[in-house]
Image 1 (tube, rainbow, N blue to C red):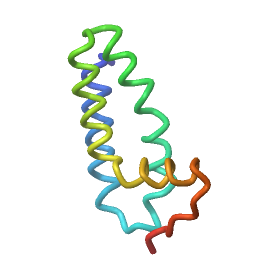
Image 2: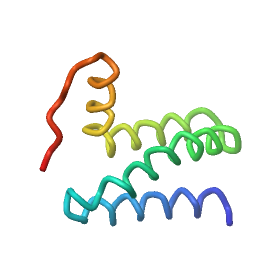
Image 3: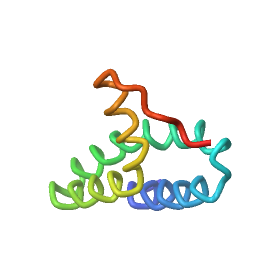
Image 4: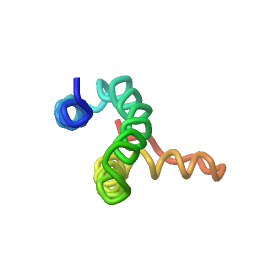
Length: 83
């Protein structure tokens, strides 16, 4: 599979996970969150810096709330988890 197809499948999987109820989003969301940096690195390696930066901006846009939660946990805060 080409890298572009993998990136498109990641985006489709992210959209499908977003449609799930919140309690069912955790496991697939964490898998997507862990896979994204590897995929972005591969995009940067094969296609250059600009596509990698665009992919990183899209990733941060899609995962802004989980990234906020993780950053608050790393700072020692106890943020509330949505129900």
